[in-house]
Image 1 (cartoon, rainbow, N blue to C red):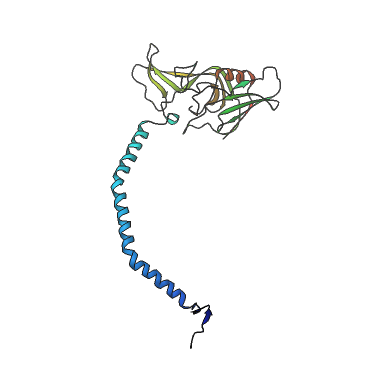
Image 2: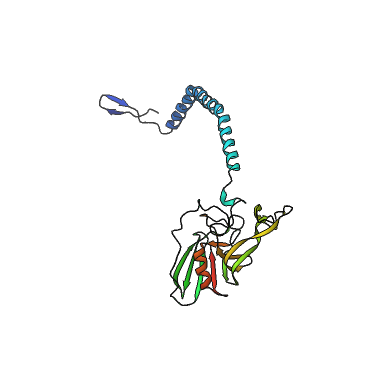
Length: 250
């Protein structure tokens, strides 16, 4: 059977055979692989060799970074993080950020008090008759010793509270022998005794957790308690009573 032809000017063209075109395209692809495959493989091998030469250097750099990160532990999660400082305690305060958050306007306002604590914001909000009268910057429980979220109430107030679990081992002269200890985990050195960390204006919420005056380094750093500036702890302390509701959220 003869193919029909179509005149186009002075040239004669044959209509493209649709069934033959895929085979023609496949043949072209095979030709490309045949003529260019060897060149392509050589190029891939050269790239592999270059990468292979730099892999040892990358491995050494990653190892060095890992060792440095292990030696320089994040202070937020370090067991050596000072539990208390500023006015109460011996922790340095030069690294603490300036408090531009805390304020108190509740002295001349009456009404039922309540406290809301945001762990994500590291702030406490004090209300009287549902009116916000004060905000305090905080430092709550660090990783592994997180402050528990939930609905609680004040169950104890102690203006000169001292921790029975956290503090220092000191000698008879009051010199610190081992700082920042946990009496349940750290063995007492010979000739020393335990001195609990002061927790002024302590307002117990649940278990051993409470609000109190303490050092604020700018991130969660406590053993679970809720630290706040001294003047805010004093204002909260004088404004709450046993039974005042406290809500802690993440």
